[in-house]
Image (cartoon, rainbow, N blue to C red; front, side, top):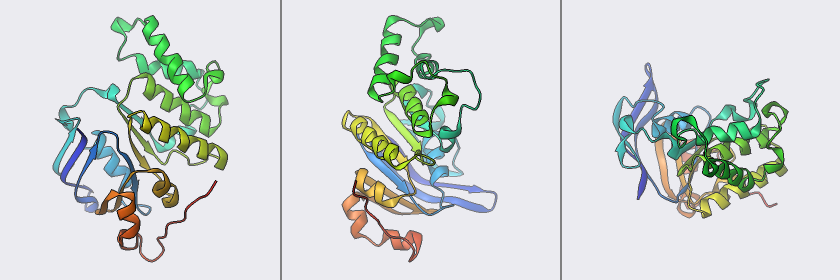
Length: 245
């Protein structure tokens, strides 16, 4: 089953094209790494995929429906670039944030025992149950990322979309975070990940989409590594550095 279908999608900011004639399909169970140099249109493409922006031309389907008509938002968990900095001085706890993921399921705003169990399970899955009563502004960047992922899990999301989720996160927490993503993907959740570290993406993702306004590659990780897409999209500065931890 396809989760996202793009056909000839183009989007520009005024006269400046950001995404040009991109066609690709994300299938159920994919772990897609979305890579490209700074300013290449990665975040714009992700926003188009999720219906946060409307294309200038082309078509987008989300879970088989035209993205403009899709209204089953709890099936999508989106963690933006700002997630590690979000929270400020809001007097909100981790449990309260994760509980927000159940609101779409709660009838007339009343949480049931099943809703509370889903929240507890999500907190356990991302290993932050011990932080449930801590305020969001007391957490590290990595802990905040896990909180937002737990909210997506509590909503029973089928698709998890993350935009450079480890910016500002230390190396040890980053490794744990990616092990968590692999585990969630093994459990059947489709993942789209924007990540500037190409080595991390090629080590973790099962498929790669490489973009610099145009799509230079979309396929399995092995075919990407063996192709010239990296050089074509990044120029001679592009290289894959694998991390061994």
